[in-house]
Length: 250
Image (cartoon, rainbow, N blue to C red; front, side, top):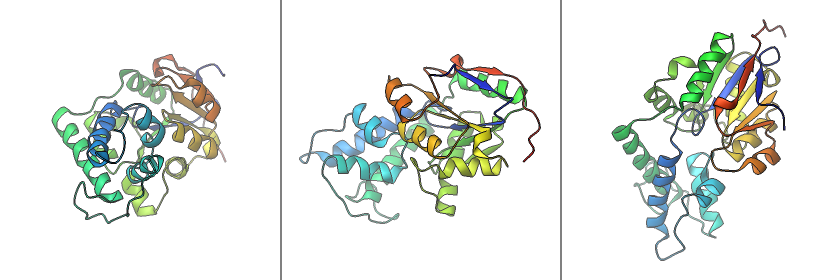
């Protein structure tokens, strides 16, 4: 495993996934999923495990993919339904909409917190001339980053609205992350990706990023390394920054 350092003589931009890296929202997501899945699973299967099922099947995936992947793990297939389904209807869209409404209600009530170590790192990177991007598969990505008070620390933000408009697939496909570096006018090898999920690390490796940093919030260091992380840290306060960004010429 490499030393936890971003060398800005080699890396000119850093792309941050939002959930679990910038914003402390994983517990809210997991609680909302449990509420929705447990109501649906009653009489059909065991309850949703808020740690193992969340990490294995839902964490890091677009919302509808999370519904499909988790239910498939229980041998359950639902009709897709449509975006105007009633929240909680027994369709992929219906369960996804119910989860979304619960989560956003929590955000409206309690707000969103940014990890202090991530905020400190963002300030240091920008002081040294690095460009930064935030990426979220959520349709509420911009709202969440704004609620956390850190939108001004990013040059670019790509979220689920962009994915829908551009028909970009979610993780483990690297499309959203590659769109972020495209907007920064840099090739992926000149950028680092900071992620906290296994599908996100896989996406970073597939996308050819020059450095893939994993934030291990759940004791998955071995799995994150095996998936392709160059560096694994428990907290971004462990990540050092060296050098300054040099002008990029293609």
